Figure 1 (tube, rainbow, N blue to C red):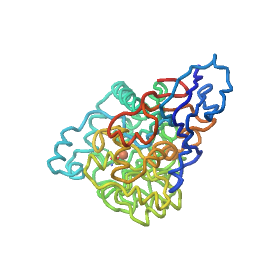
Figure 2 (tube, helix red, strand yellow; figure 1 turned 60 degrees about the vertical axis):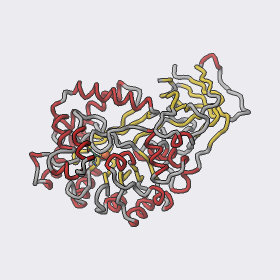
Figure 3 (cartoon, protein in one colour; figure 1 turned 90 degrees about the vertical axis):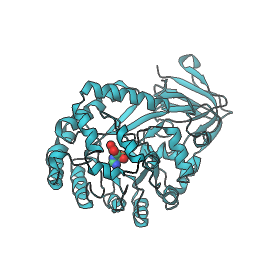
Figure 4 (cartoon, rainbow, N blue to C red; figure 1 turned 30 degrees about the vertical axis):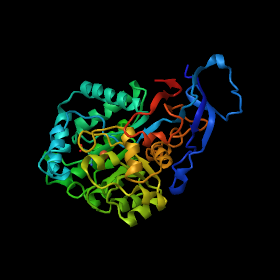
Length: 411
Ligand code: NIG
Ligand code: FE
């Protein structure tokens, strides 16, 4: 039936808006105290203040008493690589011994290691693993997730990953927004022929993925020793001609000028940004490129965190994501994400909430449908065990989410 009344929440943290919030706007969450929310046919139909009566026939609705609890929009995770085969626990222990992420990648570990395992996995195996991972994310309050291909690096396995995401989207309550990431690394069979590998992406893969409607956006790992600024510009410009939205892994390890390129191309988002320059931050703010920050990755790689505070002060739209993947961030821990964003990047709790709701929806071009509690939006909501959103970073590493609601249904 998907009709639900969430009654008398200590806070209705609306994060109201139909587009991403820039800079200072991020701290205005438009909280309603002791409010109620009605979801009708899966969509938010009424948002009521304490003194307003509920103008629907209660017999037609399931009722959830939210006294003493905070109600928020469902969390949107706009950057993950959650469909993959195999694990890389050995690489984690090598890193603890002092090896760097890039050293391991250079000697044939890293992304190409996962590529081997993903090529070997059957579609059914990847589907089952993906389903389990989505279940775990949903328990943490994630109601929409972006997922990237990029562990196939050949036609067959890239398409396999994208098909798995399509099927999961049809069979799991969490919504999946697929991104094609053919240029995640250069596989062994193309080593030393990076430009030709980019040509293969442009001439063979983009038309195929576009024709089958298997991805909305295209992404590239723009990094020293992976794909250059020039290769990224060529790849992304061609992707746009095929109708894809543009995303970048930018300025993660070395300051290459990825943020500047994202601004030049008006990408939907640039992600990581640990090494983004002042000029890159300024132009991203000016051009409305969402800065998607991934502190679980910085934490796992023991790198310095992105300059989240400065980005918000410079007027950027800052979003947060888990970057869930088997290498640099084998975690979808929303609780730890909130804590790191506030403790190490100096976001306020309110800004962190905006970054994982309305702004992360903007990072996948969904701010018109999800990411806030506004009339007409999808009834994707989370009810906390506590009366305020401020518990999210404060209850460090602990799951505050008590109930997850997807399109008006308790899941
Ligand atoms: O976002 N940096 C590149 N890509 C992923 C890591 C993928 C992997 O190590 O498997 C990231 O961190
Ligand atoms: Fe990533």
